[in-house]
Amino acid sequence: MKLTEHFNLDEFTRSTTAERLNIDNTIPEELMNNIQLTARKLEEVRTALLGRSVIITSGYRCPKLNACVGGVSTSAHTQGLAVDFRSPFGTPKQICQRLIDADIQFDKLIQEHNQWVHIGFSPTNNRQIVLTAIKNDGKTIYKNGLV
Image (cartoon, rainbow, N blue to C red; front, side):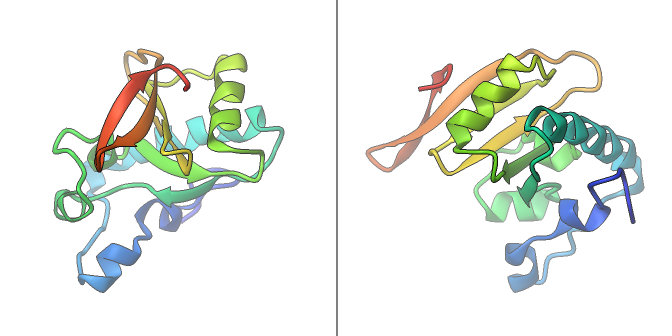
C-alpha cells in the first residue's frame, strides 16, 4: 500500500527479526494515522536531504518485536511514530545536522552509534530533542546534541 510518493506500508513493517522469529508485525488499524503522519514527515526529511533516498531500517514494531530487539516499552516505534534510517546523503551525523539546519520538525532525532539515524514525531508537540547514542562499557548512553 502506497502511503506517499516515496514510501509504502511494507517499508514500515519489514523486519528480518520478525520473520526469523515468526512475529506478526502487522500495523493495527488504530495506528494507521500515525504511520501516515510519519510517512508525510519522511517526505519532508527526503526533501531536506536534497531528494536522496531515505532507507528505513526499522519502522513500526509491535510490542513483541520491540521487546525482542531490546527496545524500551515507551518506544515511539510501537506507536508508528518513529523510524531508524540511513541515506546516501551522508553519515548519520551529516544527516542529523542537515535536518536541524533545514528546520525539520521532529520530536526526537538521535545519531545512533554513528550507524543510523532515529527520528520520531509527535502528532501534537514536537520537542526538537537531539541526542547522540554511544557505547560505553557495552552500554548505550545518550549525550545531548550531536557529538
